[in-house]
Amino acid sequence: MKTYRNIGHHERVIRVALGLLLLALSGFSLLPGWGDLVLMVVGLIALLTGIIGFCPAWRVMGINTCPPKTSEPPHSHTQSSGHEHADTTSHGS
Image (cartoon, rainbow, N blue to C red; front, top):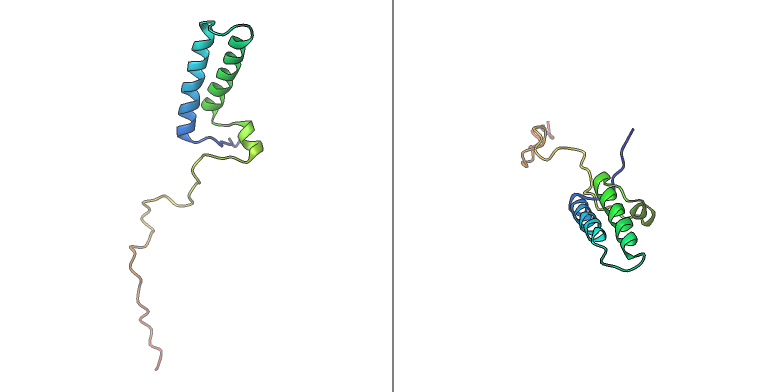
């Protein structure tokens, strides 16, 4: 099964930290009424999306903060050295 990620590393770290912070704040009952429940739900959503690396809302909006995948590794031995090879075939004989 192919996993689809649309959240980059930095955003994942922020979401996990924010989720943990909101869950901790909801435990202190700082807000009246439904406020603590809202903090808990938003904290859980942020935490879960940060852990799995996928956000359905970002998918709907077409947002992807993951870096683009490259087809070749950056330090491959098959890459050219940057020097162009001269054509040594004769053209006039």
